[in-house]
Image 1: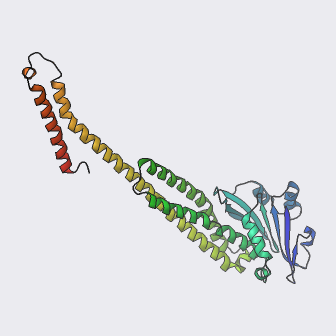
Image 2: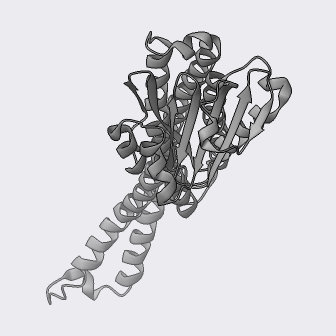
Image 3: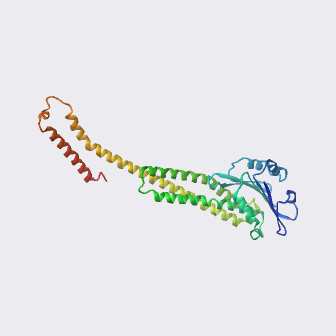
Length: 319
């Protein structure tokens, strides 16, 4: 689908006008959005707009790293959105020219739709141009990064509260959740870090005149990306702490189990030795002829077992 938004010198809004009207002197600036374009519409990138073949190729080959390329008076941007459910990166491209902006995305984009509705508002559009429309797109992309990280922070807070007094199976399940969250953070990090680097290049570049005019706005986006980066690193550290905490709990429980088994084995070792000695059945063993020998040995074994148990208990080995 191809849709067009144009603003005249008199601040009149025109929607879905023919492409050949975009070059009229009365048009101050325009925004053309290629939303899930057909093959015929894709051809317009070359036949009508005459964009550079390398930029067109980048539009059609998903997934490029966030970047900006400069072609004469046109600047080509590759941006990434985050899918709200899978957190996978979704590519959004746009061309920023001297009089207009052309956006291109092979799948529906919530961020582009929100920016489009924003530019339809006369109060917001007043005194603005296509450079502000470019800012609105990037701003929506970055704003929609925050909910994913806020959700992860809530999950981490819940995991931190759930770690106490849990069974081995519960701790194993919590550990798996921590690893899943770390994987989500890695996916988000692969999107946000390149976007941060891209915005740093943009606000410090002298090649894009429109960005200079909107420098304060783009700097605000960069500040948001810095905050997002700090949130990612903080959450990664928290997952590492939770992982180490859960592993420590599991190790402590394993050590406690091993200590208990070791104590029980130690108690039965002398008892097993005594039983083994009297199980040899030699003819000349004098104790075998005692009338009360059996009860004496059982008593000694019981006294030895309870005595060792009491001594270990006093040492705190069963705590």
